[in-house]
Amino acid sequence: MYIKREISDYLQNLANHFPAVILTGARQTGKTTLLQHLFPQHRFVSLDLPQLAELAEKNPQEFFTQYPPPVIIDEIQYAPGLFRHLKILLDKSRHQKGRFLLTGSQKFSLMKEVSESLAGRCAILELDTLSAQEFQTTRTMDPVSWLQFLLRGGFPELAVEPNLPAADFYRSYVATYLERDVRSLLQIGNLRDFDRFIRMCAARCAQLLNLSELAKDIGISPPTAKQWLSVLQASNQIDLLEPHLPNRGQRLVKTPKLYFRDTGLLCFLLGLSSAEQFLNTPLSGAIWENFVYGQLSRGLRTHSTATTLWFWRDTYGLEADFLLDHGDRFTLVEAKWQEQPGTKDAKNLEKIIPLLEKSRPVKGMILCRTPHSYPLTKTTTVQNGFLQTPLI
Image (cartoon, rainbow, N blue to C red; front, side, top):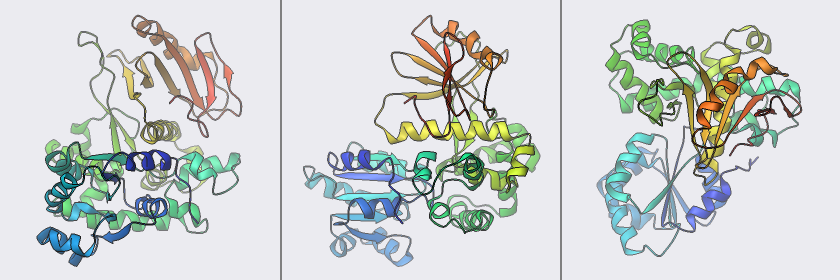
């Protein structure tokens, strides 16, 4: 079963304008399936196979003789030497678009090679796990499914195989991820420590990042914690959302917040596998905020837009979960798990809006589980955060 991805049109448009396109994303988000579906005329080769990765790295000319363009090259980070030869090929045929489609699941190593060899020659896109809208196309959505989606997550395999136990999938996913990506990016003697590190990160989702406390809880140094955190970012498992800092003189927090890319993986790491467990955990609000972050960030990555995503918090604790900067206006967003937020749930937004209105128009929004949108105050509305991304 093929699931239509919202990023498809944007991806095809970029392939019509650039000679090469790089599609990044975590493992098993559907990168290969998407490219093969959209570009069936392209050859396909995966550098997951060690012998092909070695050929591409040591003899790129022979590699492209065997796999000439148009070609999809999967997991290209395993042959960084290929980028230099690819640069030569692109320079010889800059007018031919979409001939090289590349995927990779280790973002930082890819970006290093791109900046050194392919700057200005390729477009870069990120593919996330399924959004709520994409998930909806695989089955009929009802109120119970809200919890099921948060717990099960958006990995395509879990959507097309509804009888596959999510816990079994994530147990295998984490084990494979630790063995393959972590060992290739870091020299970690004890993978159990890294496994504990991931779970401690999950317990801090939607919170300000405190590296010192995180390191202390695991028994590692803050520099090591920072390095391990960068691995989670590089493999597209987490994001660090930066605060909005328009004026250095303002008393605003400068620490980022930690979010996971997929709530299913997040819930697995937290030991949540049932609706009852989810409803009883004190982290339900944080998981919902993490979900809303995922919906917003997916929308920004799916569409060609100048909107940027931040959060807003001052040193006194006044905070808005998210701030979207559209260039000519702001949208402040609060994520609330309840179905019918009241005016008290908008009190932070009502305090922050006058501060931002000094520079440009601002509207407030609460994204929650309400079945119907409604105005809450003169400046703030309530909208369903599960199936809509109305802010992009």
